[in-house]
Image (cartoon, rainbow, N blue to C red; front, side):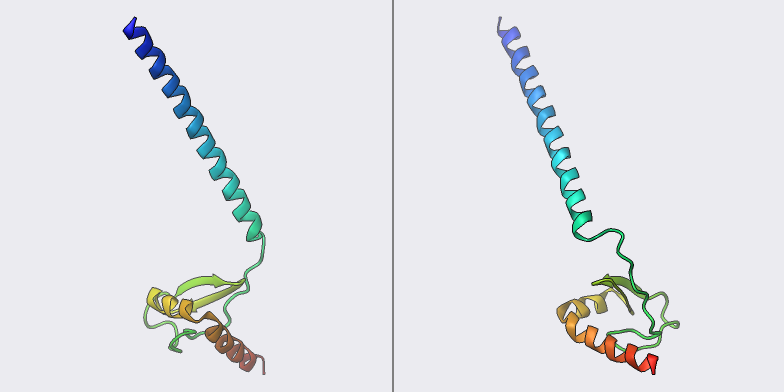
Length: 107
């Protein structure tokens, strides 16, 4: 009798665990879809037109591959990940610097 109760309890716990796991998977999927819609997954990224680091101004080529990331639809290149952290501290400062440098290229 005690064994039957224990077996039923285990069965109920297993069923509850499966339901909990299914719910977690469902919620994760919904959050993923919402994230994709929020960031407009098909948005085109504008290429980085400069041949210098946006943070320090060094010319690319001698120190290896630049660290590349996207900020508000614009590809940005810096020398390394630590300069990305500098960018993150004041992105508007660097985006103004970018806009000024890009305007000079167009002249």
